[in-house]
Length: 136
Figure 1 (tube, one colour):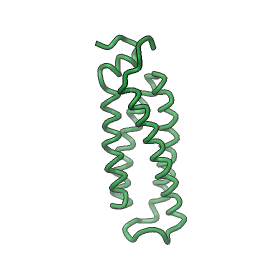
Figure 2: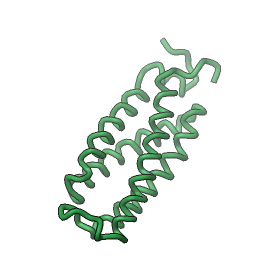
Figure 3: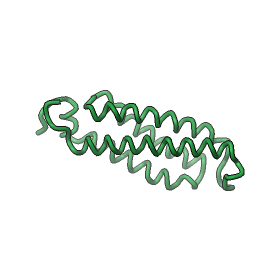
C-alpha cells in the first residue's frame, strides 16, 4: 500500500483480534461446562453447549486468520471480516435465544462490537486504502 493505513483499519484489526480471543475463551468455557454440568445454572440448557462451543471455536480460528490478512491490506480479508462480523451477530443472537440469559453480557458486547467493526471497514478512507486508491 502506497498510503498509510488509516487508523480505523488499525483499530478494526485490533478489535478483530479481540473478537477472536473472546470467542476462544467463550468456546473453551462452553465446552468445559458441557462436560461439567454440575457447574451449570438452572437456566442453561446443557444440550446446546457442545454445539455452540465448537462453533464458537471454529469462528475464533477463522476470525484470527482473517485479522492477520486485514492488517496487511487484503481486500479479501476485509470482505471476510465483514462476513464474520455478520455471522458473529447471528451467533450471539442465537446463543442468547437458545442458551439463555447467562450470555446476555457476551451478546451485549459482541453485537455492538461487530457493528462497529463493519462500520469502520465501510468508511470511504478505509475502502480507498484497501483498493489502493487515494482517499478523498
